[in-house]
Image 1 (tube, rainbow, N blue to C red):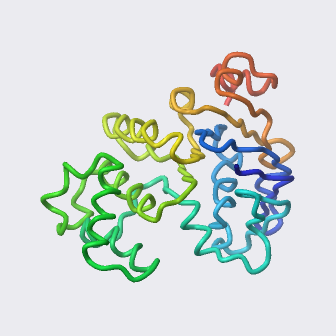
Image 2 (cartoon, rainbow, N blue to C red):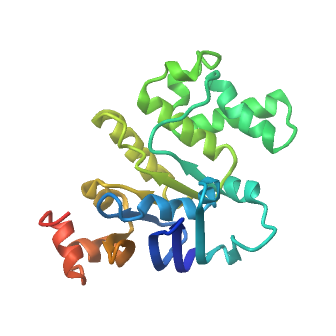
Length: 252
């Protein structure tokens, strides 16, 4: 599982999130919800240490993934990010062919034959329901794909590295409703095979997809987790009055 212990994120003098402790169960889809500015994306970036790439960002507390402290000195962050794949809010395929989008990340991992690369590429594209749509144009630019197809390609690119965990930051926010439905369907297909943490502003989407929900809120100038539990419990009988107001649409 993923476990955070008193996790805080600071950008210079500003504390973005403060003292977040939660456990993300293995094989579950966990949604992080809350209004803009409450630290949801910052939290997600800590889980594969992409936060390290932001100038001035520091963290305190601990994050354990599969029992390993990912902030332990000397940890190989490249290996961590292969194990904990990240999907950005806006589709970000490389300006290369569809085929090379996946070949490139595999070549960076280790030497493989062309046949091996093609086999993994086909499997990854099948996993995201994209193979039948693109199998006859694999050498065409990925940027010619629709937005929804580009997002599924980016997910396939992450899956090709055989991660155990997937982090998704608003994966449908830049997509139209039809493309969003396809990505949601993909997340349903991937559940149980992967532990998935998804940040979303879409409460209906969180309710449809998530096994567990964490509600973030700004308190005393910093993002904090104010509620965590099963999706059914959090949406039907939240314990925190602020959560109840937010989830019912009264506040936020």
